[in-house]
Image (cartoon, rainbow, N blue to C red; front, side, top):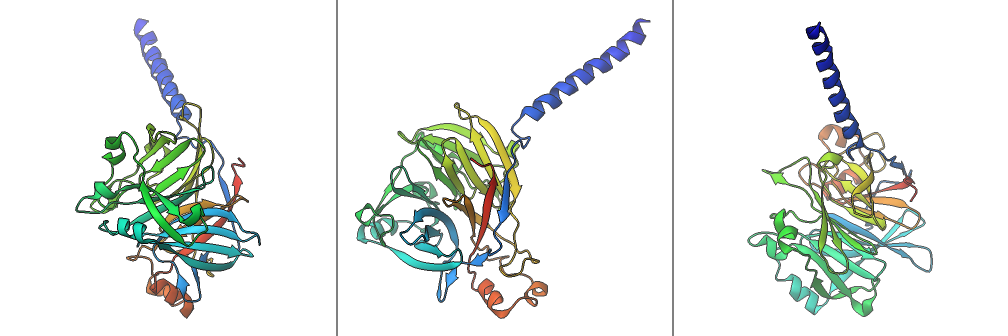
Length: 351
C-alpha cells in the first residue's frame, strides 16, 4: 500500500519541480517577449557610392539630422581611418564629402598602430560626436577606447576635426578586461543618462563565441554600473548600437544577421527584448543573398533603420555561379569592396 503511494508521489514531485523550472525559464529574458518588426524599403539596399566617390570598410554610421532642404545627414566612419559626411536627398540620391583631420588631431592619430575606427555616434543632448577605436598590437589596450571628436566651431557639420579626447571609463580594469588585439567596442550608443558599450565578441582562432557583453555607464562620471551577458538573449556579437531614448537600445548582431532591441527598468535590468532577422540581398537582385557583415545601425527621425555593411573581403565577392548572373557594374562594385547600405522602417516597438 505504502509502495503504491510513494511511487506516484515521487512522480508528482518531479513533475512539480519540472513545471517550476519551465515557469522560471519562461520568465527569463531569453524568452523573446517583444515583437520587433522591420519592413524593408523597396528602394534599398544600395551601394555607398556616388560617381567615383565611395566609402571603404565602413563600420560606423550615425544620423545627424535634416538640413534646411530636408536632406538627411549622416556621419560615416571607415575602419581604415576615414570619416565622411553622407547626405541622402529624395530617399535615394547620395552625396559624400570627406572630413579632414586638423594638425593636432592628425598628430594624435599618428601615434596609433592603426586607425581602426569602428562605431561613430551623435549625442543630441550635448551636440557631441563619439568614436570607438579598436586597439591593435603591440599594445592594444593603450589605444582601445571611446574618443570625443572636436569639430571646428563645435559644428558637427564642419569639414574638419581639430582635436580628439579620450574618455576614461571606470573601473578601467573592467573596461579593458575583455578587449583584445583588433577586438573592442564595436557597439556604442548614448542618451541623456547613459553610455552603452557593446563588446564585439570573444574570438578563438578567428571563430567568435556565442555571446558577448554589454556595459552601461553613467554619463556623468563614466562609471560602469551594469554588465550584461548576451548569452541568454541569443546575441552572439554586438557590432552597432543606437539609443532612441532612456533605457532603450537597438543593436545589430553581425554574425547572426539579427536586429535586436532591449529595454530596461529603473534598476537597468532587462525588462523586454526583441530579436528579428535582417533580410539581406544584393542591390538590384532581391533573389540573391550574399555574405554580409553588418556593423552599424542608425535611425532617422522617421524611425527608419539603416544598416551598413563592412565588406568581409574573404567572402564578400559572390561565388562564380552567382556572379555570372549579375551585371558588370554590380560585379565590379563587389570586386572593389564597395559597402552596401540597407534601409528598413521600424514598425514595432513603436516607442
